[in-house]
Structure formats: C-alpha cells, structure tokens
Image (cartoon, rainbow, N blue to C red; front, side, top):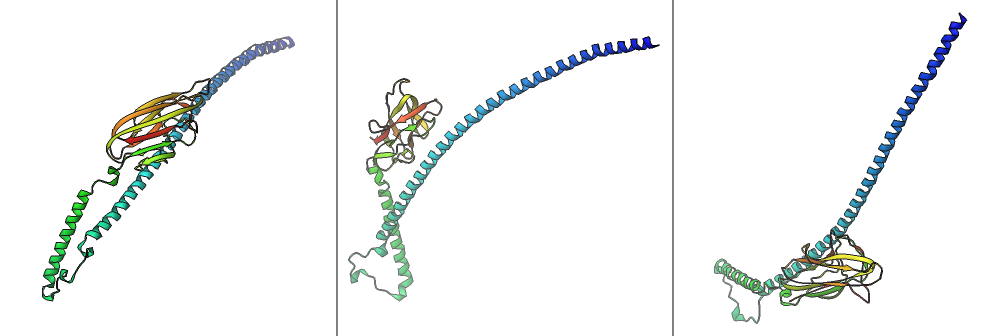
Length: 292
C-alpha cells in the first residue's frame, strides 16, 4: 500500500514540474510580447509629441509675424486717421472763414447812409423776405464758385518728395515691414516714420527707390517694394558666409500711382531670409521717392 502511494506522489510531482515550467515559460513570453508592444506605443507617442512640438513652434512663429504685421497696419491706420482729421479740420476752418467773409451780413466794406434801405413797417414782411432770399442766393452762388474754383488742394500744387533711413540695424524677419525712422526729407508730409509707409497724396508718376545692406557673415534676404501690399519690385541682398562684407543692393521703380495708394518696403513673406539688416554712419539702408 505504501509503494503505490509513493509512486503516485512521484508522478504528480513530475507532472507539476513539467507542466508548471511550461506554463511559466508561456507566461514569460506573453509578458515579453506585451512589454514590446508597450515600448513601440511609447516610441510612437514620443515621435508624435515631437512632431506636435514642431508644429506648435512653427505656429508660434507665424503668430509672432502676424502680430508684428498687425501692429504695422494699425500704425498705418492711425496715421491715416490723423491725416484725415487734420485735413478735415483745416477744411472746416477754411469753409467757415469763407462762409463768414462771403455772407452779405458780414460784408460791410465802406458803407454809407445811402447804402442802407429805409425801414418801412408796412412792407416789412415782403421786403425782408425778398432781401433774405436774394442774399441767400448770392451766398450760395459765391460758395459754389469758391468750391469749384478751389477744388485743387495745396498739395496738388506742391512737389512731393521724401527720403528716410534706418537709425540702427535690425533683425531680418520674413514678412516684416521695414521702418525707416530717420526722416531727412518729407515734402508734402506723405511719408510716416512710424509705419514706414508712403501714402500717395495725389495722382501722378513717382520714382521710388530703396537700398538695403546685409550685416555680418551669412546675412541674406529678399526685399520687396509693395503698393497696397502687392509686390512691385524685389531685390536680393547677400553677404558672404565667411567674410563680414556689406554688399548692399538698390531697388528702383517708376510707377503711376493714385491718391491713397500705400507704398512700403518689406521682407519677402515666404523666402527664408536670415541675419540682420545694417544701417550705421558708414552705410545707410534707406527708402526714398519723388513725384515726377
């Protein structure tokens, strides 16, 4: 009885050893496969996170560029508002002065006794209304002739010319409007040193030019002359990648422009320009124009 029992115990132990080891090996392989899949998933997540980071950084750069452009456009709008306000105020004052000087009630000249009509109470209503009608018609006719004859503003009879340059060097940023803040000439007051824009005061043919110097080794850029945000001329400046040369370039355009057109110089919106634009005492990055 004891021997069969021991034999059964040995068989059970052997079976547990064989089958238990096999189960542990299968479990180990299953876990290894799970870990491998987890590592692959983590690697994919890292790659996606890196790509998302690149996209976010690119969008931040684009937002920064748009913010700078919006600031430049807001400055242009403010300049135009101030310009319109000044013109409107001057016109209102001139019209008021003209109205008073031309109105019969304000025109006394060298009046004598005979110039005044005797006051007759019996004809007060008729003659008074008649005088008011005649005086009003004369005033309207004079004002109409004045407006027709004076429709040309003072700006149309004056020359238009400007010349400005950068007072210091600045970084090259794509789609950035260049501000030439030091004004040497501004006949007609059509150039804004705050926005860098020249707003055409009257129709005509204009000569516009701009000169740009790259600063230091490896600086290069594509620079546009734009009218109403449309490119009308483009130059390319490039300094050597090994030498600190300052090879500037000048753009030149003869354009037929209309009153209200806005002209400015900007860096190309899509070309990957880099480095700095130089402007100092020995060289000046500048923007100029003159009406022919």
